[in-house]
Length: 198
Image (cartoon, rainbow, N blue to C red; front, side, top):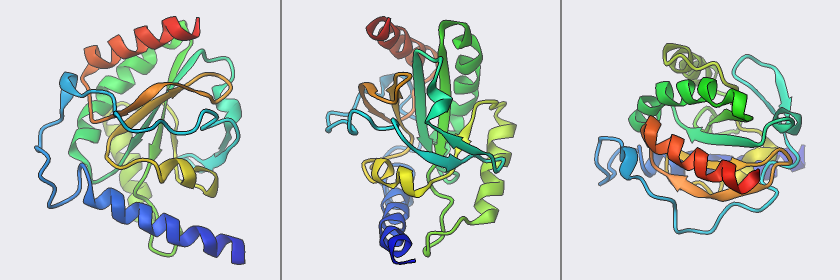
């Protein structure tokens, strides 16, 4: 019981930080997605083994762990929020890339960052919103819900959408990208990172 309370405050802080940055209200950021002009973050990368061991639930209530990475040379992890217009705008392009790059050993996994209440439990209305957004965007790739195993990772995300890549063992490849890109912009990044892991 005590251990779970230790994670409630970081989860609440994460929701607050994410709601005040990037897509959050009152931000000086433009309302249009940065698209192809988005550049990699200059900030430090999440730790090397960022997804080497985790368990979480997906939008459909299935348990997912690091085995989802096995057999994929590269996994693009897109952290998004239901309140974030640029996040939603890039989702159809991500869905298309997920399909087009499957034969090259690339997959996309989303993490929905804003579906927790202040006490750390899931807000079922926001989870349903996330399902509606994903299905309406043609998304067939897995979208994870925050879990205790993902709090440390999500605590390093300061803007939405944020995207990073991992290899099949969960080690990060490349850097953290903050902001949305269009399909061609992400394809160029994927192609470059595929060369690194092959």
